[in-house]
Length: 419
Image (tube, rainbow, N blue to C red; front, top):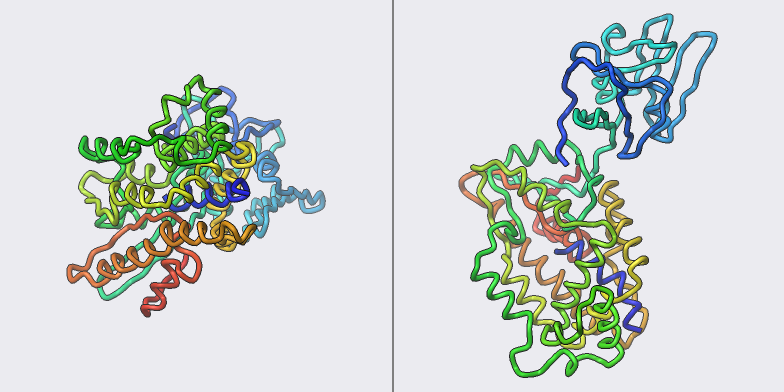
């Protein structure tokens, strides 16, 4: 029955714990490739540069969005439709009509090449929910819907706290993210994290190495069932790792190691995690505040009961394809900013009463206690007498539910604005 918890636990862990530029100008005669939402799109007419403006094929763009293009032969107008967005180009009238009701210059934003309509990247950026990027080395233009993420703000007196729900691993197509988040980050005085993963000291590493193994003369085989031990042995054999090499490690640390391997096999990597992104792009003069720190989190894992640690290990040894599918659904949930789906992922529904007490232990330690502690820390930031702006990144699972950060802040009479 332990296997039944695998997807819930793996998703909770990831929820709780190539360079590009915006479009720039250049002359270009070679074929320019088009990607929409990171997928290659076929076209009859290539994109083209004219001085400092990049023009992109109208129909190919909407085809890549799985949208629709309607042609009115009487008025000689082409209308592109994507979800609630419409963009109409009048060939004879030389008009641009957009659902955004903004004004554009036909001569600057539209060109006809080989009887095909091309529109400027700037027009795309202002009329559709897309960001447009130019990759010079690959001669490729990327038009992509930015990830929405989970983003809130709370204000008190002269203090402003931005709250971003993160996932600690991701895929390259998780980016870009919506500009409101980027602007808020650049406008902030401090970056606030659960733990600063870029400044781990030698002492921290030594502590981690010591706490991950048994120091009482026992081994892994003494603490878990023969069934799970044999499954671990088979799993490690795939990578030519003998079971003796890991027999001194505690179940929780092996669970994390197996998870890391499974994440990589599923195409999810920490370098595409949200914390890593903002740490990489942090201005040099922006200080970092830690809410917990590495040792706090290590102690949290180490304080799990041995029964819970065995369940965690068993969960990590579950069906990797099924786990991978669920993890990619999680990434998609973050892209869409789907709070209802996020909350559904964080709710444990009892499968077997025999294990309910372990899941209660797990949720209490991983989420509930930490949520209350982090809300207290956020409240201190909001009551700061200096009037600062803080950009707080915490695992997305911590924000939702009755004991989630958002509800707890609202209970303290703070007004929380969701983007």
